[in-house]
Length: 606
Ligand code: ADP
Ligand code: MG
Image (tube, rainbow, N blue to C red; front, side, top):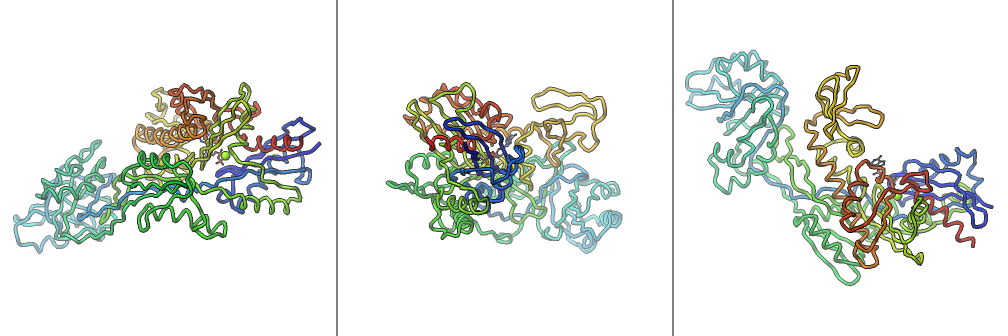
């Protein structure tokens, strides 16, 4: 008889299964779970292994020394967090632009004129239309007085104000004008330049400045110039107010960095693809190379920089030379990311089309042997590298009640989506692909322009609702829920996340539930539907997913409230029956690899 532990070091989670083995019989005693420390496949993982092992052993009152053997997985690290980056071309603009949603813009309408500092108004002699610029050093009363005092030669058509006093100023003006306030970096507004501002009525959005032809009309632009204001117009879509300032050519300089190309290098052929062509073309190229040896990006471009970064990070953590780090798979998805507008003066963003990329580094058995050796020394228990994840995962998945061979599994974790298939003869075929839960969260984070990854994780995990009154919320599926006691005022009129325990988390600064929902669902489809089909095609005996009948989904992302449905739905088109696993009849979709690793100890004894 012996006690064994299977330890699965994942990108996000380190899972443990402890079992007693008696001859050919295995009895599972406890499971453990904890966060993975450091990037998967590096020595930093050791602490996480200790914690997860302890978590399982504590449930049994065991010490490390009670174990006779530990098996860890052979892990292919996916650098989700540093590898996922949106790649797009940086755009040059020759205009300065402000587009934002101040709480209290004053007035309504459009104003066009020359930008003039409020304190300089009295010095103007020539007849002209002006947009007044009011820095915070001038209070609203003084500003209004100065503006009311201008001569007949001057027509004030609008104002840009640094403080939030737009309404206060307008209330004191003899003639009401559109006013944009809360422009923090007002010192960046160039003076003496032609300038247009627009303030939309409450509840609506700007319509002239968000239209390239609208801007062209206001400034008499040529068609060439109109092309260049497209990013400006796009950055103003959906805002309540905006400013466009025409600066002399060359005033705002910006180096443009090309998106670049990606080279997929196989043992027999090499394929090059331009990132600008989009995710579908990139994925076609990746699929066209059967045995990928390495993937490289064009030097000096966004693509090159990103893939180099992956190499450098892995090289540093594993004390190798970057050129010895090989990238084995890559998932590209179309996304858009809010890009800082060059020459902007209020931190404006424009939504640029981009490609998000997750890259997976080749697994390195030596690295895992090193982890095993250090663990062995520290625990005084023999530790072995016990097999490839997807192989172990299928062993574990087969403990799901109702399953039998032939069977395929899709293990949806944080960094990678792994698939394996076992045929009637017990032969296993497997594949590890880049991109999983982390990438979904990163897409959500970048598309919504969130600073916080944790918030993106929460948006991924919990459904949405809109707090319509203090006594009821409207769930994203349209149903209303009523409360006996008033809700906290802090969530009123906000889009919120509904946690499992009913707690409401307000999403500040987000006003459209539909937009968040659509970004969330699409991110999940782009990553998991793509990768499920991609991975199953690779393990299918014929290369066509149609030739697979049953699929069990495992891994943390199979806990998602909609991912399994999205995948099941997509796979049903290939006549595949797919469902969420329930490891050992009690673990849900978790612990498959750890369970498989522990089971592998039995077979070797035979
Ligand atoms: P790994 O094997 O790579 O460590 P796991 O199998 O532990 O990954 O899965 C981790 C992933 O599962 C993370 O991306 C996490 O956000 C996701 N996840 C965990 N719980 C949930 C949940 N309830 N809903 C959606 N996703 C979840
Ligand atoms: Mg895993």
